[in-house]
Amino acid sequence: MHPPDNPKPAKADTEEEYYFSGSPTSPSQPSSVRLVLPDFTLELKTDSGVFSSSRVDPGTKLLLMELKDLPAGALVDLGCGYGPIATTLAKRYPNQTLWAVDVNDRARSLCEANLHLYAESTSEFHVISPEEVPDGLTVSAIVSNPPIRIGKLALQTLLKGWLDRLELPHGVAWLVVHKHLGADSLSRHLEAEGYEVTKVRSRQGYRILKVTHGRELGRQLDGVDSKPV
Image 1 (cartoon, one colour):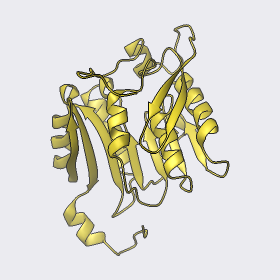
Image 2 (cartoon, helix red, strand yellow):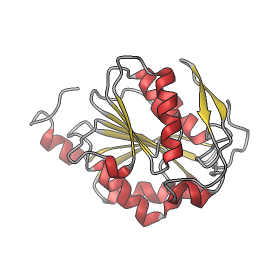
Image 3 (cartoon, one colour):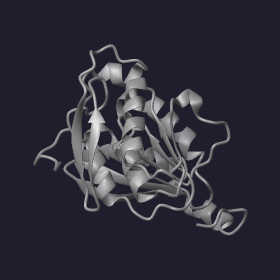
């Protein structure tokens, strides 16, 4: 599915329900959406009460088009929804453990179903709520269309908690955020926190951000107690 000429950031069927409710109250209306990428096409199960249920969010698709060269190690899709990112990661990186995290139990059920459809039988994946994230979990990469509308401070806290889980020194986060939803201010905030932020692509208002540990920290830690990639 290609984004329209002037796409707007996708909204949940009931925005507050998606972002703040673990159990959607809207009646279930199962359907499917098609995700067309250069390397494969996915027919994904979706439903009402989850983010961008009627189409793959254009920002998510742009992120997946640009995503490349993830380091070895565990991967996480933060705010996985019904799983377009998680399922793509499982297809492209079948030998790496995948974590898909979402507050919405309907979204998690859909994500797990889509992973069972497309992931290799030998792949390891875990679809969990934020409360189920293991203590001490570290990951090599975060790939996310983060839940911007939870609010600026809540989002900053959420991202900081996960960026702290990135392995040193080569961990990386790939994020997509729309300009009108604060992409540039988020980038400045992360840089102020000591991260290096690269704008990989900007298209129709969407910013693809690549976030890594700061250069000075990388120089200090490179080759010292670090995991080879």
